[in-house]
Length: 324
Image 1: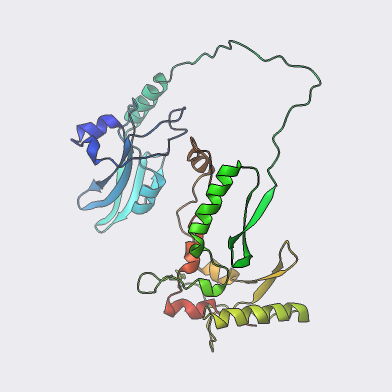
Image 2: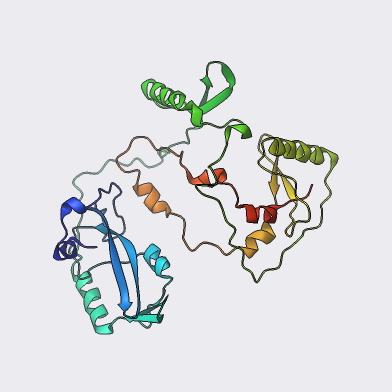
């Protein structure tokens, strides 16, 4: 949403939530938003209309447009846009709604936006001398890793950090990791999971798919021993349980890791085919890179794999059965 429209709606700056991530690729150079605000937006005309909450990012930029609706908003409406027909269709309780755009208005806005882009001329004031044949300096990958124990009484529990940062930064990082040592899981017993009264994971299986039972695969004695040990650990920690007469059945798969040890996985190919994929794309890499602007340290620790802590709904557990 552009700031001009924000003020015309009678909204105040105090209602905005601060935003630290700049917008890139919007009008060319990076733009720092004024903030975010959630507003209820009604699309369509009664009785064929829907009202959804939209999280608007407010920017101070001249534009012939009023607002832009992103993919998350279109996904919330389950809308199907057509740029050829300048229309959007979506389902409502009153039937299928259709929102039309005018070709003259679209052309006028597009031409006005093009006129707003000024031609930029860059002039060089000085150039560094170039010596033919001189090898260009390339930055290498910092492969040096330093290991240190997270707890003094557990020397086997080590954490790896980069060895290139200055000593003070490394000491601060070590102190931070030791302060939150309880969040690291070294065994399956350290992951109790999230209580089921808060959240459970449901399988969105398409009812048109029939259950698939894979035939049991035979493994070499070495691999069978790996499977036996891994299944024993999971049973002991109550992460899995024995079931009888399952409707879905998969096979374990062993994959050799870089350290030459085996990792046990489960072939859920058939189950994945029966579950429709989510319509929400992953964050684009340019947005992730833009979020690092102005910071000296980038942390790759996130809660993306937090779904591993969510237990499966009781009615869907047997669908994840595998045979050993």
